[in-house]
Image 1 (tube, rainbow, N blue to C red):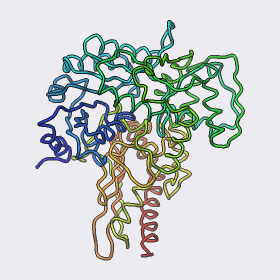
Image 2 (cartoon, helix red, strand yellow):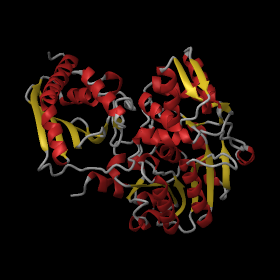
Image 3 (tube, rainbow, N blue to C red):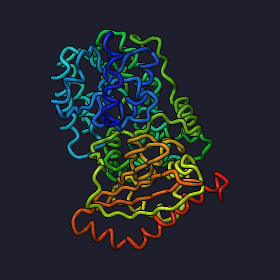
Image 4 (spheres, one colour):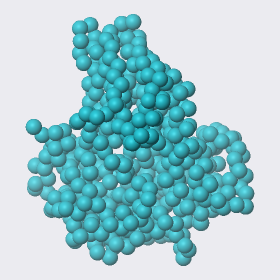
Length: 491
């Protein structure tokens, strides 16, 4: 019997037999996840290359695309993705994986060009300071573009900070400005940058399909200092903020401060900060000449639009939604794991119970001992983990691969199952799962905490903290049941 992932792989195959198809790499990422539905709206047939097809289950567009399981770091998996392809979008990078991401980016690009001979490639890279030393992150983006252009007919868009609901750059500005009424900041915040709205980035990518390969095209909207990005945000939100630049550089310290105050992890904040240590501006002359129909949205308007999406809880994708370099675990065999199971009868329908535990985290919190969850998130952030500030994309719905505070959605099957995998700093691997089973006059809720300890430190961690975990898990299961019964009127 085919798995759900295998069904996705087969679902779109027949629809693309008769016409050419566009390949999208990075469909689980921030830009790729927004590009796919817009390509479909334009009538394009789309094939997506994903490492784990489960990660796109639940997307509204998943049944309208052909899914190919593959990895740019695994060349043997790529021929099926490129079969019959004339145009491909290259929207992947390894920065979030930490370590030597530049080497992984280089390897992925080389594998891509070997598999995609002759394919028109549309690549989204980053702006670089002219004639100056580049950060490792920006240098890697440039190197990938050079590899693609050298071997393939390529259109390479170079963009500065992308502004949109859920983007890393927007989230960094948003949290710094919202949380700090006054701040002392390093001198590089006076450097000039050139942000661009996600709406415009998508427009450029789509319009490039109808052009011949164009080489490098730099895109951007208005030029302003990074400090002014925060001040404009504050003005749009009606906030008063005091920002004092001081004559120090300290990029590592600043990046770690960003990692502590904002949802952005340290390993992502460091390359982001290093990318703006010098002015980074776009020469948009070619973009205006080649794409006169695109009028870039001013930064102030881009902020307003992004905030509207956040306030309406309509965030299509978030920077944290990509799979990244963390391994994916499939718990088909749970033998050997430490398990803590809670089960109780709930006088409410399964759909109601599912809605309650599916809505945990983010602004709503965790129903029981929320202060303890907050404290654990603060400790995790101090240790270099994601903490609680990543929140969640939508308060009511979850998709596989998305984040919920310091968890990632491993499986979701309404109204039967939700499984979260821990991404906080731990001496092992952990999951938290809820299941519903129809039962007389309601349903049975089963809540399971699982832990795969790593060595002696993992065992000590579990058994030392188990008295606290036992209380938290017990209260959480009870709170979910009570909330569901209150909603259904069964209390």
